[in-house]
Image (cartoon, rainbow, N blue to C red):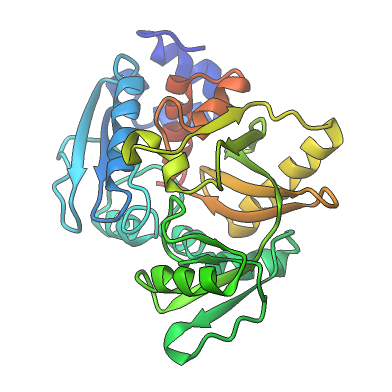
Length: 331
């Protein structure tokens, strides 16, 4: 574990000779200026600012300088002397490939998945197509274009999702026709096309992946309902709540199946650097169903990726440093 003031030694011992050599061609960690890119114009702005606060605290003392940049949209000011942008903008603009493409155009190195990968991973319809083609276990689905009619091939019960939102924004579990009407009305606020998925009943799990390391499985247990925005962020909504268990209490063979399916999804999308893959473990037959891969997962100290990393012996600061190091290989 790297200690404050030991980042040059960490470069050599933690990164490995080849990666360290590539990285050291630029700067060592204690010379690095990191701009933490936060906020964004989307619906997850407050969550992003919370992630940014955590990342800034985690990096202080381990890199030369950390600057928080509140991003409101395209053309934002990036510090001229910063070496890399640490992207924690969740949802639209920051996670969908738009900002990534802008940073690539401006020649600015940044953390996480590249623009093309981000675009596909963020779109639940496009990523679902990739999963199906790659043989990843994922719930049956169809796409409804509201303006052209509501032909639900999945049937009820089902899950209704806007394809390009995060943090379960606009997501509804539908058990009857009344809930269907409400769900379509709400999801339709975000896009005309809506993803309809088979409703799987079981344990909600998530798997963090950084580089080629698959972290322990996290079991997500909402205290009521499902893992919607109120249960994810009770500090923001004022209600809800969730208990987390890491490592998840699962039989060893089930744990390995879940991790393998998550890694398969991550690799099928070609995700660079890191992701957090959400999985539902079917109560009826134990099948792990992949829902999505989050390429900009929550990064507060209590978020799920840092929890999983800690269970693997990687503390919050080292997790952030590892993400930076890996990202430079794609810059």
